[in-house]
Image (cartoon, rainbow over all chains, first blue to last red; front, side, top):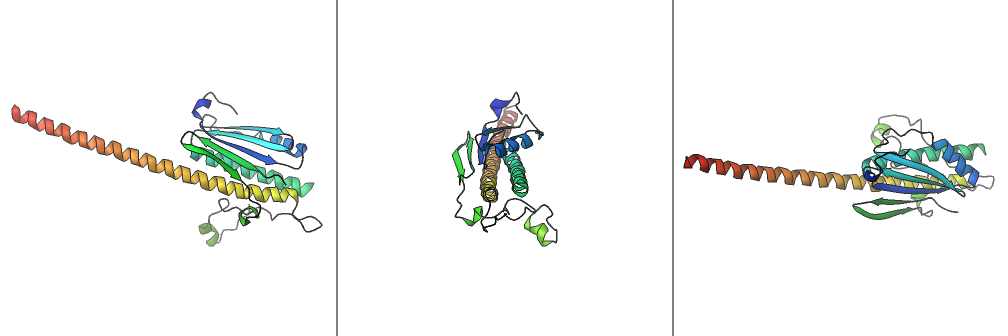
Length: 88
Length: 124
């Protein structure tokens, strides 16, 4: 989710989550990507996988929006991990 | 095992890295301190139906890789949430201070302007 106001989004967080293998990391990207961003002018998320790592870059207009967005995405990642762990 | 990590950057703060310390109890639970319902509503009798499941163990009684990852991520989430809450508090206090300075400056200018007006009246 990119926006035209990227230069304004100066508060950033990069998160890397090492899964067991690249397939799990790719599944996580596919699950997370469709989630809509409610205010794309204030917050951006970029998901990718590198080897077995899920890599996420967050950009935000301030720390308040960053906290809400990051915590929400981490909740989703924990659910994905829990689900894969349960069914594998 | 490899652990999750995060790096925070902003124009006003030094870069901050968040790492998992798997020997600390903070990273050995799936129940985060900064997530879920508040202690107040739990004490009031609310049942947390969204509570995360306990970490899963394999046939040897050891936690599975993904359970360890989930526990590490839970602790990391708490670290990030607490840090960003502190940053929000700092930004709020800074804004209050700036608002106060603007208000005081405005009041001083108003008083000085008022003084000038009085002098003008007297001269007339």
